[in-house]
Amino acid sequence: MHLTKEEERLLESDNETVRKCMEILVALGEIYGAERLVEIRSAQISGISYDNIGDAGLEWLESLKAKVVVRAYANPAGLDTVRWREMGIDSEFYEKQMRIIRALDGLGVEITLTCTPYYLDTPSFGDHLAWAESSAVVYANSVIGARTNRESGISALAAAIIGKTPMYGLHLKENRAPQVRVIVEEGVNPAMAGYHAGKLIGGKIPLVEFPERLSRDELKWFGASLAASGGAGMFHAKELTPEWDSFEIPEESVVVEKGDVDSDCEPDLVAIGCPHTSAEELRTVYSLLRKYGKVRREMWIFSSRRVIEQNRELVEKIEEMGAKVFADTCMVVSPASSRFECVMVNSGKAFEYLPKLRGVNARFGDLEECVRWATR
Image (cartoon, rainbow, N blue to C red; front, side):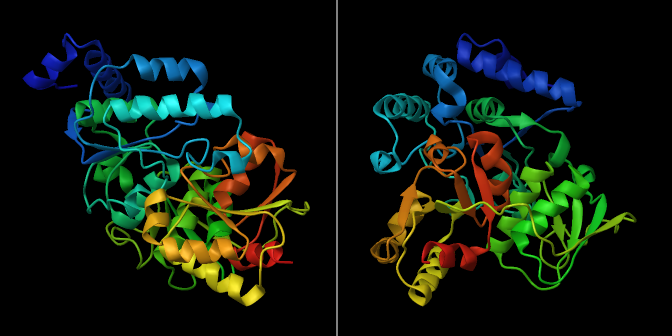
């Protein structure tokens, strides 16, 4: 891999953190055959829940002595940093999680604690990024047309400190071509369409044909589920995403049909917001609560603190109806979910990950079904 003189100096830096970060990026570039590094607009660091990185990861973060040189965002933590007691989080977990957050803050990372950084700072078409959250990666590549591989939390942080990432994979146009055509039948929920498509095609990039035009939030649900169940880093959607007609239509095709999933457990928690809810989704939730009445079961809604603050009056109305709106975390990365037997979600990503990561049963329902269950 070709390095500029400046990059060679970083590789020999007296600052051990900077040197190690360059070593990580060069190693990745050599593994994946990158010819050079490319400057990035922003980075997003995932895996920051204490439940995820533990004491070893915490100590490693606290040992770093550098500053990020591009905008860098923190993914959700394992708790709401203000209302953690309401979630049933213990003091020891809180203290360790806050040390992680302080360490990231000391590195210059923005403590956004959200999986939807594009609501806070939307990249432009063609921007190179180093994002690590799977749902954000898919959204950036597919809906926006920016370019990022699915980084690890470590490689994303290294890229943020250097300001560059190896130019391979989805940074190159030729690697963004669709490999399989996915036809979604009428009546299939977008989140479940992504979930089933991922199971069918694995990590292949699909060109998706939906029976109707989807909103950006619905494309978000589809992409998040696709990444969780199959591992794809992007998709193209006919007449919806910016690069859908930039490549030849694949010969291979699969059909996603409407069908039930095995999720007949009795929910004791309804959880919405994986990925984090947008302002429009919060408005929809409130509209549904007005239709069905007050919440009678435990109902948690997750969003970014910024979106909550910008919609404070709306959030207060939702909470007056009995739901709880938490920031900074979600049902997948927080150990708070583990004390429930069955969680009802409107997210294919959460449906896939809750049993694996939290050891709880999951039941899927669309947003209206979730609200209806919570108000029964």
